[in-house]
Image 1 (cartoon, helix red, strand yellow):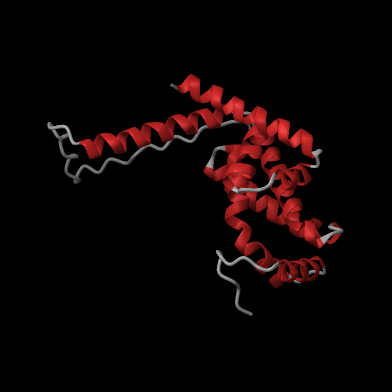
Image 2 (image 1 turned 90 degrees about the horizontal axis):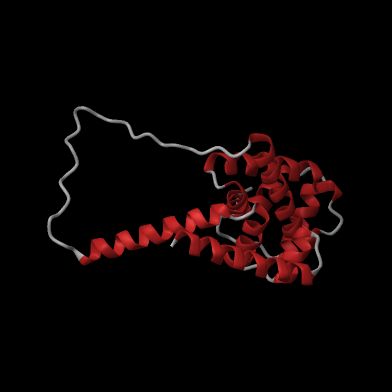
Length: 198
């Protein structure tokens, strides 16, 4: 049986059938169900952990937990929200157990490699624009990392994953009004963190 491409989105009736088959132990159905969702799971885990290696581990842990817990899912139509909760919980557990650690990449130095070219002496506007974009992206990443994990989850689900507030509320098992107020608070926290980076 061929697996769908990672970018293919399965229809809801097909999803429900895959969920039911996977819940009965059909590994191929689970793989077909998860394949188009892996990137989203990783992004959600990364939004909590801010670390590639930890996010990959948490995503893997979430897949194992989802496979084991799937038979207890009552409503196949609620699979995506349920999966988001499983991933968020796995990432929070990873954060709790491993603590916050930073990755430091040390470039290797090859003595046979020629030294990097000298910086240009004349001003090149395209280089300045590229530098500005890098600086802005770095400031945003630092500001985002300063947020509480719960704020990151809300912002990723709503702005990156483009999930409606009602779906976020179901995912986090909170009332819609609470989701709205927490999302507003998360935006304000990000604005303050960005101002601090300026």
